[in-house]
Length: 253
Image (cartoon, rainbow, N blue to C red; front, side, top):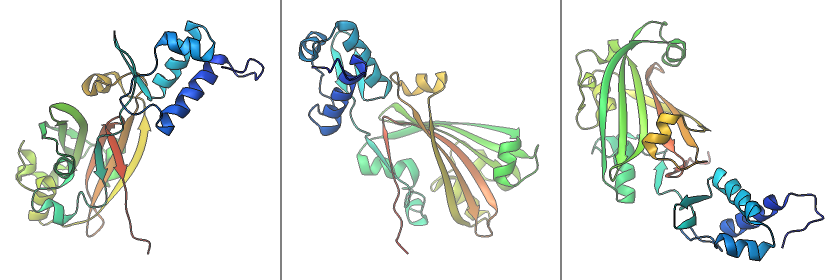
């Protein structure tokens, strides 16, 4: 029952109690929440109050509604993105870098498509790639899927002086991908930096990922540097937060 003297709106009290039960595992991932009628009886509140409480949880991405079936606890992330080793040379040489490594770890079938274009560098790209504004860039715009569902959007940009005459300007870059082709062209990769953020999705991202209401996206901007610290590539990556868990490991030295 809610505390009418607490000063906290009833719908927030109901949402807080349901949230605690979800986090504690009392309502397990994929489980159906009690019916609206049962929640009204349990908390001694009206149907509109229960609906407001569920809307709060839906907005937090904790539950999802299925028409005619009810409200369900959202399952946890199903793709683990292990950042430390995914782009290592050891992973890339057998063609097991990036999404292929995620697929091998989680047992899904990866696929995707690539669109190529060329464009002048804007201010942001010029800053990240250490080139002049207007410098010609090669752009690889990719949609990546897991078992047929869109799981990642990625747009990489490289100075065209590095890609001209290489398979980087082809849809299929071959085993090892872009980074292998860069190294074959004499641009040894020394390090990567990733800048991670989160935001609510744009309408086209909601449609591509088939995102339920209230689910954000994870944004990652990765920059690949040569051994001389020259930026070789920038990659803007968007991930649906309901699918991904990001894992970072590093030594304690």
